Image (cartoon, rainbow, N blue to C red; front, top):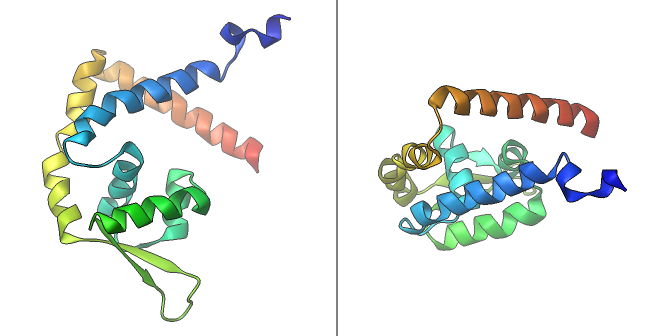
Length: 144
């Protein structure tokens, strides 16, 4: 059955690309003592902090079952502070620590280093990203 061959699957190249990109990031992030998912959380918070856990999850397409243990580890590493909302105890806000803010300056070279490793023209990478964003938008419509 042709439709069940791995080489004919639409999703498989995305899965492989995601794993390979994460693998490229990891040695760059290891020197700062963080994982790729932690890096994603930090990038969200560097854009805007504090944020509620729910909003971080929405931005990263992560559910609370995945995000909560990740945030606990980051709190143990002194990267974030978790604080319950005084008006609504169910709501938890995440704030960056000074250590995380200092890390931002140190880690700023990571995206450039990664792009250099990919050895593709910048325009090509921008187009690939744009195409994937369009696909994500379409997938969100299907998911609703």
